[in-house]
Length: 330
Image 1: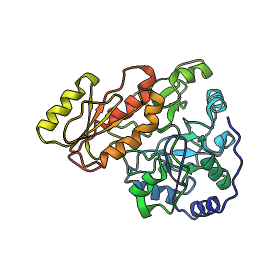
Image 2: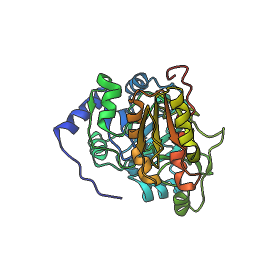
Image 3: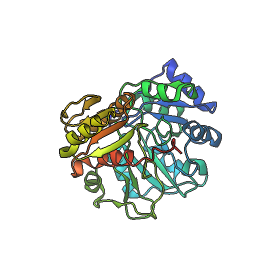
Image 4: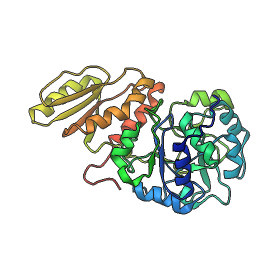
């Protein structure tokens, strides 16, 4: 854990005033930019749902200044939760625990659990410590679409719907936090992220099982999510060149995200991503946004390896390619 001093800046002070008045503040974390509201204000959190067009039963994660705030939001803090918080907070890990009675149904999606984390970003921690409370903050984008990893992404997508956008530069991790459910005894992995199941097992002595249908609802678990507006297809590496040529023969404009330079053809816009999971994750959403803005008919993405270290990236890409493009987002 790193020590981060509280910044007494006019920008932070204005952001805190907006939050206390029930307004919305977008802020950076190490994962993606969040759209923040006072988690103790039902009206403020409802504004987040309205701006994002987010389904009312979809819970949001509450961001905390530090682990000492856990007991305010839960009825109990299991030893495994304390151990994981000590090992990984601040950091890209969300813990799902039994909610305290006062926690709003709007925050939890009507469930008896709440997702909590302490982000690993100096500006986020400055804001949280100055606010001295929980900030409900899903990703700062329209529901189901590509998550933002820069302040420019937030401004382009949400515009005047957000009163303040705190600019902390590009996000270091680039994909959403790992979510672990500890509300029912057996640890369950609800969403993969930078912190792996093996890393979690090294701390608590047991590897989390995959979350089943009886697991709490959690962000990012819908079959269709993290999607560009352009039709997106995942293509095995060995079939990418042929897929490009086939679409080009049909005069379809193609955008391509691959880890190796693809065979170039007419009507092709290409982005070559890093060939390792950590750097690929950091670049992924920004690259998909640029390709989504290229005016292509189809966005082809080279499938990533079926290996444990690529699990989180593979999860995001699979959900992005599962979108139904006959309609706008729900």
